[in-house]
Image (cartoon, rainbow, N blue to C red; front, top):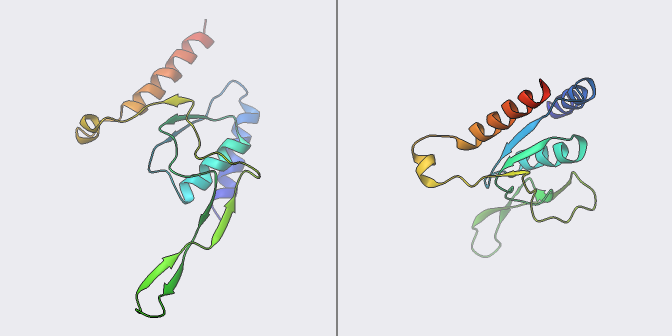
Length: 131
């Protein structure tokens, strides 16, 4: 219920701020609902993606139903709903426009160099715009 108005807000921002830029930070753990969001941002906006490639395809199988194995009685789950956010898209992942792989040293220091890279890019574009 929240996604349609959020997407409408992003599209409205782009239409009223033609020189504005939306950045989407993503990483190797981007999947499920976040992957669905990436697919919509990729297909409906001019957003720049920053970080690592997403961990799943733009169109993917998700959701789950419980499954009881007939002989062992073991309980598991199986994905059973196909989400197609970008019809006909066969990419293995969504590739970022600004690539960055987070080293474990930065992760364990609780630092986010990717965010700093994006903020630097924004500042650079603002300087160029004000010239």
